[in-house]
Image (cartoon, rainbow, N blue to C red):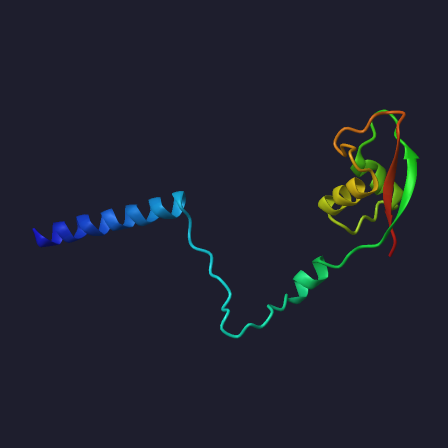
Length: 115
């Protein structure tokens, strides 16, 4: 009898912990503030945070062109940045323009990344 009660309580605790983890999530550990030392990013983070330099190039969009196709062609199909970075750079060069809806015949500035 006690064995069955123990198994039942264990199953309830397991289901409750799974439900809590799926609905609320696990707490995110915070950095210790005791030392007041800045957290140093690792090499991968430092490499990804490096600002890529680019030159703006004014191009007229043709029918069927997309931001990715134009940027790939402009950079000789050797794009070394993420698509998110291309979108951010395009938005920086063309404020208030939608990078997902380029209009044929319109001219936009596109990033040409230097090596």
